[in-house]
Structures are given as C-alpha cells and as structure tokens.
Image: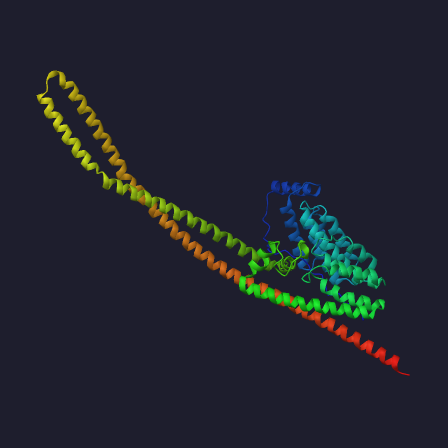
Length: 468
C-alpha cells in the first residue's frame, strides 16, 4: 500500500479588475506617457499600487488562457509581493497543463526570488513558506524527491504551513527508503493541532512507517493512537460547535483566541500549538470568511462608538436641565420686578427729600440719586441677560434631544446589521466545523481500515505458522 497525498495546489486570484476603452491622446501626452513607461523599465519605483495594477493585467490575461502574455507582463514588473503572487498563479496553470513540472518549478523559483523584494517582511515570509510547500509538493508528485526535500526543509518551523511541509517531507523520505527519518518528521507534525493541514495524515503515516520498517506491533499501536486522537478531535469539534451556537462565532473563534488561559480545550501556551488559534487560522483562510469577520468587527466598533455618544448626550442633557432648573428657582426666590419697584420708591423719596433739603444737602442727595440710577440700569442689564439665557439653554436641550433620537436610530440600525452579520458568520463557522468533522471522520475510517488490514495480516501469519 502506498500513502496518498491529500493536498491540492490551488491558484490565488484577485478580483475586481475592470477594463475600459483607451481614448485617443494628443501627441505630446502620448510622448510623455512613453517616457513614463520607459522610466518604469529602468528602475524607477512607481509604487505598490502600480505593481498591483500590472498584476491584475497579468491575471486577466492568465484567466483568458493567454499565459504567454501574462508571463510577459510579469517579466516587466518590479520585485515584490505582486510579482511573486503572479508567478505563483502562473506556476499553478503550468502544473495543471504540463506533464513535465519544469516550467512550473521555474515559475515557483522566480516567485521565490521576487518575494525577497517585498518591503513587508511578514507578508513576504508567509508567501515564501507557501511557495516552498507548493514547490515541494510539485517536485514530490513528479518523483523528484531530493528536490522536494530541499524545498520543504527551508519552510519556517513557526509557519501555518509547517505541519503540511513536515508531512510532505516524510513522504519524500519514505520514497527514498528512509522510513526512520520520515517518522521523525511525522512525529514533529503530530505535535501540532489536528486543525492544521497535514497533521491527520502524519498520524496515519506513523503507523505506515512502522509497518514498512517491519515493526507490526508498533504499527498497530500507532494506528490506535491515531484513532483515539481523531475521536478526541471530533469531541472537540462538537464542543466548538456548541460554543458557536451559544456564544457566537466571533466570540468563540476570534475573541477567545486572543486569550492565553488554558480553559479552552486545555490549549498549549505556544501560539501555533493552541487549538483555538489553529481553528481560527484555518477558518480565516477563506476570503469570504475574512470579509464576514471584518463586517462584524466594524459593526461592533460602530455600536460601541454610538453607545458612547449616547451616554455623552445623556450627560449633556442632564447638565442643561440642572441649569434651567437653577435659573427658574433663582427667579422665583428674588424677582427683579420687586427690586425695580423698590428702586422706584427710593427714587421718589429722594426727590421729596431734595425739595425740603437745604443747600448743603442737595449735593449728597444728588449723588444718592445717581447711585440708585446706576443700580437700576445694571439690574435691567442683568434681567435682560437672564431672560435670554433660558431660551439659549432650551434651544440646546432640544438640539440634544434631536441628536439623541438620531443616535438611537443609528444604534438600532447598527445592532440589526450586527445581528445579521453575526448570524452569517455563525453559519460559515458551523459549516467549517462540520467540514472539519467530516475530515476527521474520513481519517478515522482510514485508521480503522489500516487496523483491520493489519490484524487480518497478523491472523493469516499466525495461521500459517500453526499449520504443520
């Protein structure tokens, strides 16, 4: 029996390209455009957006079957992420159409060289690991095992692609007859959660490695251990599905994955060996899932901001109400009209005193009348300002009420959209968990078949030994 590789090379694509008719340009503009293009061919950096546009041109040509045209466009691009991605997709086309892997491997080597020119080191490293795994798989498929081993041994040990690379590395070593080294690679792959591609195959590979090495007892134990691991993983997946239904996919897969505690499936402290992180990374591989999770995150952020604005408006309205109440209470305690009446009465009394006063007292009475007149003027000013302030505050209060109503309407709309988005994300997550469970069921069936074949072989061997 030979081990089968369950991995497939899939092209990466970028959507959103649109074409338009080219307008007729004046000669001077056309000349300038030619100079601009020539500048781009002699090393002038035109920016990442320009490279993305060229990549989209190449993808359009490739999708229409014009691979030579796509290659010509890619050959004129600068080193970096977009050129590497274009050559990766071109290699996928070559791998599908060519019986000889030479062109595909050359395209992958060019993609590896192009990825080194990416300024974003994290993005470049992720793409490089992906390219190395694809190159290793392609070389293995066509029997170039040494070349496959060379590619796979360059994959980082802290990459999402590491378990798959270790599994393929073991397959290539097995084909060369080095079963012990192959089992060492598969043993390392088994340390990762079963959510990563290649880990389940590594569990099965351990049993096959013992079988090919002639250790049938250890082979049976390895198959039983794989069987138990797959059964346990199905229990984990059922728990995960229950948490998604109870708490939602965003809380279960995204928020809980940020925590470092061991209460969620007794996760290891290392990031890549945390089951919840493995499930999150696998789940987020789908671009549709990325968009769905992004919508939920954006709507949650909007809801938090609107709730904060609502709280601020509530506090502002309370402050306005307190000021209005204070003004009304002050007016009720001391009426300016009473003060005006008392001022008029004092003025009349001073006038009567002036008629009967002597010449020496006239100046003093006149000074008092001046003081009283100034006080009445200031009182009138205070009354005018006080009468206008409640109107301003009342206008602010009505504006705050209108803003509050608008904010509540927006918050209600955002919450409705958030609920719909979370439901859509939950459905995607449950579909993902169901697919993972089916894969575990398939792997479980394979181990049971291997165990049955092994026991059948041992039974026939014992029967032959007992016959005279």
